[in-house]
Length: 404
Image (cartoon, rainbow, N blue to C red; front, side):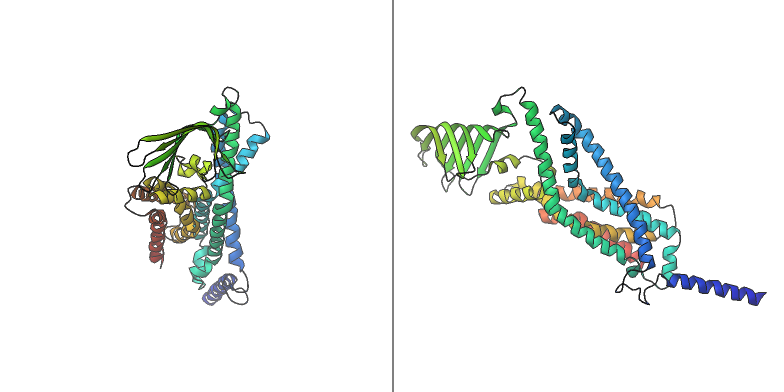
């Protein structure tokens, strides 16, 4: 009967509204009093996928590290626990890179799945806005930002420095079988300028194993950068206990600053220079790739190159400020994922994963363009570091504008 059908339809509609009301805020289930049923449902679905993506991505990175370093580690004599120690120490340095990608892929997959099942549509029909629906996601994003900052400031620098130290120890062990101590871990033609102290250093070679330089020349300059004295030595090393440099088997030359004429030459067997405080570790950092350095090492190089006003410090500055800017990457990822996932045709959630790959490619292009602009000194390194994030934030704003 028509009346019965209407009552039945009305009963179903009432039941659907009652089911939707279970997820809606109010009646002791709003954000102030705790999470509601939909919050738990959303977090459960999302965190399961996030955990799987993190495991899969970290597993792939572990395979890559093993592929790149396993042979050199074995040749260095690494066995059993040493190998696993190296891999475990190395993995934390990749986590801040993996986290934004895992957030994007997992969130787009989860929201796409809910959108396809009309769950988001039902919630909006019940009067719940996207701001309240996505509140748990935003809170989790803030937690991810705090985690990224803590990792970049503490765990990742430790991981980068320790993994490099372990690899160097194994490499030194391998070289010790065929090379003399002064050639183990040797870096040839090391130059270092200390404009603050008006000193210029040069080593024919510096052994990272013995921590000594060989074939050493140190020039002391005056205010007009003219040479006044020069120390020549067969060996030199930094004495941490006495806080100065020791020079062995050498000669001290004196020059007339105006003419550059040699006016004195005094040989010595061993000479200690208390005023020489240059750090050999800083000398060895120069020339390394920015991506291979930790957050603290980048800061040291930036300070050094700023004193020199040397453009070689630009790549290090871009990398340093990029690590800071990437702290907000989780929130930008969430801002892109929400409108990107819940609009358009309800297709397979895997399509969202494919879209996320395209977004990361776009971020990579923006990052390379920004780095190029900074290298050419068109923009400041701090500005260049923020360009990819600002670009993706603008994209997220445009998506949200379309969503409304």
